[in-house]
Length: 255
Length: 215
Image (cartoon, rainbow over the protein chains, first blue to last red):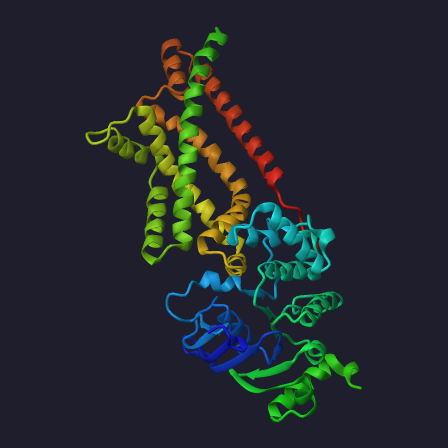
């Protein structure tokens, strides 16, 4: 089963809250090492999709496979699955009572039951990866938003996930702090971390994504390489959306 | 004369402190349990906790104390007045401590739970390692208030014959005909005890305080 070429696969996912269909019949294949960027207007179910993929929110129907094993099957230990899927949130959600080091360590010591000293070494290494080894003993409140988000990335990386999910990781940041977070993500992409990124950062999407998925009203409208989507979008809605977004953020990116 | 006065009442202090040291931790354990049940339990257990709190807080402590006392030192169980009284006070306090901790747990915010689950923690691990350490910090100031209330309410066990500060003051007042002196001395001792407890907890709050935001 584990010889599946896909790390993460979603088949016909549907999520309904009460009367509201959040998304319907979404299928998705994520290859190892691939960076996928999901774009689309607000409220189209992008964030909910990420939360469903790591089982934080149950889907109403459909199946999810991690390394070929169905994780939506009955009797699957959700906590075990979540160890293997890293998640980074829009509002960082660092543990406020722990230092940067403590935030990265706690999953190792309490979930993976790693000995403290070993966990500390690994945590320091992860903080180094995001350029924050010198902030190890700072509490979240003593860090800038960009630094907090990088600690959150380190916290997720420490669990050695198979895939990382990013839910609008820069949306809550001041403009001048966005770069440092995108920089870390870009570096991860170069290291062939498998990533699924919901973002409005078109520059990042264009430069880093292997594939872009355009979602609207709970459906995947179109997907393809950045080249295909930016230069030759097939659907009018994709064109319109990218046009608006580029007008807002990306004028200088046009050559 | 005044020295003897004080000495006699002061002997009750150890009883008062002992009653408080039983009631307060018991109330904390029960209160935390009920707060967790209320916040994270299923529908029926959560309703049960809510009703428990409502009833316990809706009846005067002295009335509850008598009811619980006669339950705890009756036919089935037979505890000494000291233990029956202390445990009763603990049960009464648990409802108030539950409310304090319930609010503190909620104030920690849903996001912390989600983040903890996202790195693979079970619900219990998240509550234990992420939610409770933050909630306790938030709870210290209101808990300090509850601690002084329990300390003062320990005087209620006087009604079931436990020889604590107030009971001794009352005896003195009756034998010496000096009610002002007797109750004044009792009041002074209570005040000093409450002051010490509050100062101690202030220090604890200061010590465990997280660094403030850079803003």
